[in-house]
Length: 122
Image (tube, rainbow, N blue to C red):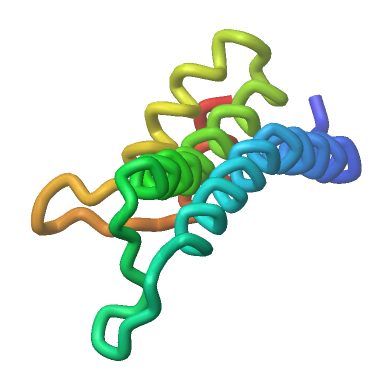
């Protein structure tokens, strides 16, 4: 059995495109909520934009949660593209682990780690 590198490359490209397609709505909604939150803040010289309104703070928290979820969603749906539905959960969990500090020796790997973990889980 030989491995056709064109097929492997096409499968990886499809997987990366699927991951990015599912990640984009999370990024867009997170960015819009964060922008709305910061638009109502007060500019300070020492702290940057300071949001004091409780509603706008909540919008900012939702926006930051969206940004925190984009890496796990990328890994989860790369894995989904390669393995189907059983790949979603391992991809999400390992994507979360790749981007979340979990102790003194943990390294955050970001997008590259999410891509690698998505492929490995798939």
